[in-house]
Length: 231
Image 1 (cartoon, rainbow, N blue to C red):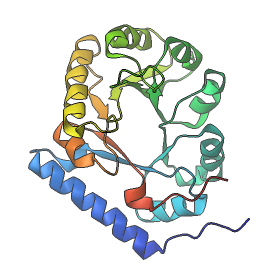
Image 2: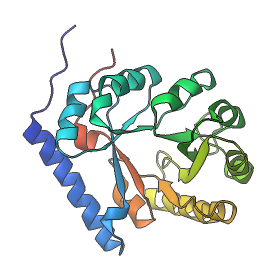
Image 3: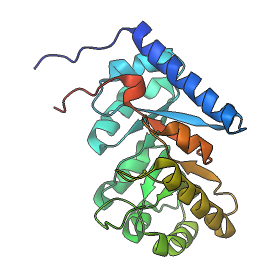
């Protein structure tokens, strides 16, 4: 099997610069400080060499969504002192392994996962993922069950709640979806005043997310280019 073709570092840098400029413009339009926004570069299916290029360009936050791939990359690049964000669905039986390398877990969405992630030794940062659709098969807790799940996180040793995470539903108007997350975040802060962060916004809709208060953007193809075919 042939090795994936990496973009030239200059090309990667241009895309990264374009996204950073877009974030700055969206933050300015919203009257926000761009420095309060964390850009997580999602590198699913991309090789460790691309992440090394990103690190050389100043990227510190990297996102992955498949456990085995993420685990291998985190081990291979341990010397770079990156912040690893797990943004995919976590299998309960893999929860302990995920928290061993992930600095932040963005997809906490059920009681069984919270219990599996709990630990008496050290804390991992996490977001509660909210499902903005009526389809229970999609990741995330329903808005009706959100408060109870937040309370469960707060009562579980080893978890530090940062806030909420969500994905804008396909076909929906992104800003309206993100406005809903912002409202839910305000509700969550009544239970957890320090959970003030919102993980929302991807390559195609990050300006709308910034307008509604996003603090963590999960951006892949706009920076990395098209993903290689999964092996």
